[in-house]
Amino acid sequence: MVVSQGRTGHTPETKEITMTRLDSAKKRLEAAVARLETAVAGNDRLTGDDPQALKAKVAAAQKENVALARKTGQVSARVDKAIDKIRLVLET
Image (cartoon, rainbow, N blue to C red; front, side, top):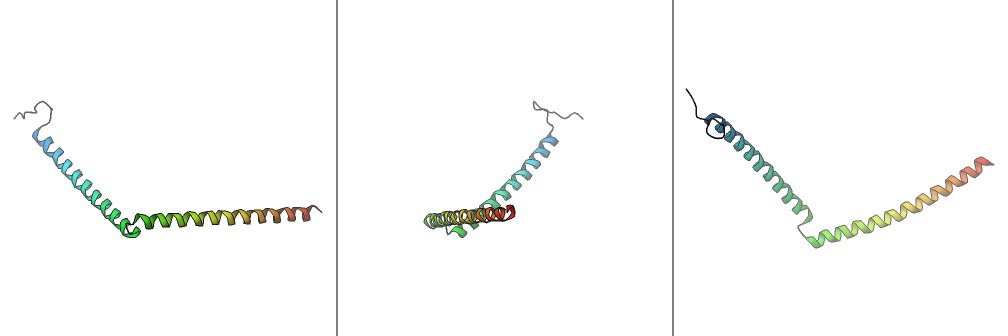
């Protein structure tokens, strides 16, 4: 029995297998998109979906970051002074 392969060289059986694989891939893609949509919806609930509230949170975090950077600089300067004093004591 000779099966016509047509111009693409695919038999009806290979076309069916290809379509099955495509259907499977489509289902996996749809499931992934659904998971992403769920994740995005969850994120909206966390932020309250309010851009002004989100901006306020970012501004507060930036202000805190500046304050922490200032404190870190002060602590670093104190540690450097302490190290210098220890070196002087050890040298004498």
